[in-house]
Structures are given as structure tokens and as C-alpha cells.
Image 1 (cartoon, one colour):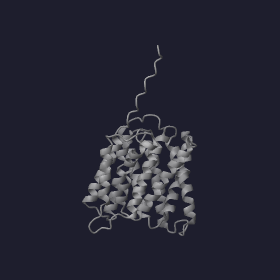
Image 2 (cartoon, one colour):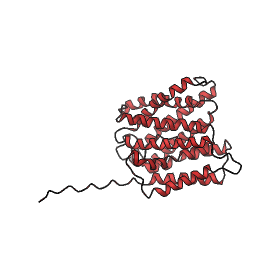
Image 3 (tube, one colour):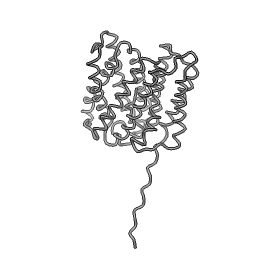
Image 4 (cartoon, helix red, strand yellow):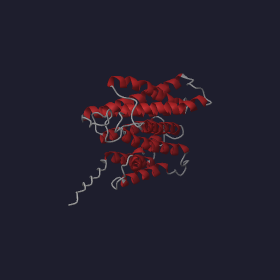
Length: 317
């Protein structure tokens, strides 16, 4: 899950300068980052019966909180950040998105959950007017409607199916929070670097998860080697995906980055369908194409132009 991805129009390291376009290198790095995130989703799904939600989330956040300061030192980055209340709010939204997606993967197919999660560009588009002061334009509306139609196709119950489950609603809620987090990143990126935003995400996640982890009825730590392996895989692939994506965004513009990140969906969905034998019918195929196609289109649309300043008042004669 790449809800901490840098939003369109920003640079991954400084979020202020325009990235130097180097298509082969950038495409390779972003594709690798997407595969890492896909592997993270697969690891979450495979370890869902071995780990609690709080164990999985804490493992990811702990590793990030330990690694980011080590990377920030050589890069001379300030991790304290600006607008700290918004940084914490972005961390809470990202944490909620990750926790809800873990729980969703426990109850619905991986291929369905990851496609529903990738509705976040739609939610980001709808929320941008209130959070970032960037109103949705008429050219974006057809793609929002198309994505919602695709969602309806995915959730529409088969004649012999169970219909909408709690897991579907959790995945949608996760997508909503991820969209909110992305819009907050867009706003926070005006004065903070990507590592600071991710560091606050990890610290907020630790504080959010520590209480439920300590009070859960299950053991505090994994009880099997397979559980430890799953936890290590989730933390490693999440941290690796973040670092590689930050590097790739230096060489690739934001719209292309969003497209290459769709490899995450393809990798996770293919694993679920082929290896886990998850059902894949015409409605799921059509709905997935609509959701992902409209998400890509929204990522490619340029941001609305800023309104022209009003002419200065002329002195009266």
C-alpha cells in the first residue's frame, strides 16, 4: 500500500524543485518500488492468520522510525518539520488506511481489496477543494463517475455470492483515508521533505498502535517462525518501497510515477488470482479496468491553473 506516495506535482526529496527527467532510470526505480509495495501487500495477506493487525502495523512503523533518521543524517534533512499538527493528522490518516487495509485483507480476496484501495485518487480529487484549496474541475468528473461505476461492478453481488462484506467497506474506508493523506501530503510538501512526512507517519503509527497492541488478548509478539518471517517481510518491503520510490521520483514526473505504481495492483492481484485461486469473473475484470483506468487518468490530469491576480487599483485622478 503506497498511500504515503508523493502526490502529483511534487518532488520526492525536496518537494520544491522539478525532478530531472531520466525515463529509463526513473521507470526502473518506480517499477521496483511498486513491486516492493505489491510484495508488502502479498506478505500482509499471507501472514494474516499468523499476525494480528497491531503486530503487523507496529512492525512496519518501528522499522521506518529507526531507518529514516539514519537516512536523514547524511542527507542533512530536518525531521522536525513544519505545521506539525497537520503532520500528525496526515500520520493518523495514513495509519488508519494501513490498519483498515490489513483487516480488509483478512476477510476479502487480495485482488479485490487492492483494487478498491486504489480508489484513493478519486477520493483525493473529491477532497482536494476542502483540504488543499484545489477544487474539482469539470474535466475530472467523468473519471470520478467512471471509477464509482467500476466500484459498483466490483461490489455487485453474484447470484450465488455473499454480496458486500465488511471487508469491502474496510477497503473503501482505507482508500478514503489514503486519499485524505495524499491531499495532506500535497499541502505539507510546500514546506517539508518526503522523509519528514514519512517519519511523522511512522511515529504517529507507533503511538496509535501501542495501546491496542499491549491490550490485545493475543500474545504481544509473533509465536511462530512463519509469523516473524511475515512481519519482517512486511516491514522490509514497506521501507524498501518508500526509499526506492523517493529516489525514483527524482528522475520521473508525477503522472508517470502514478502509472508505474499501478504495477503494485497488477502484482498483488495476479498473485491472488493465480496462487491463492481467488475468483476472477467478468464483472471484477470490468470493474477493475474502470477503477484503475480512471485512477490513471486522474493522475495524468494537470492541476488547475491558479487564478490570475486582480489588477492593482489605479489611483483616482
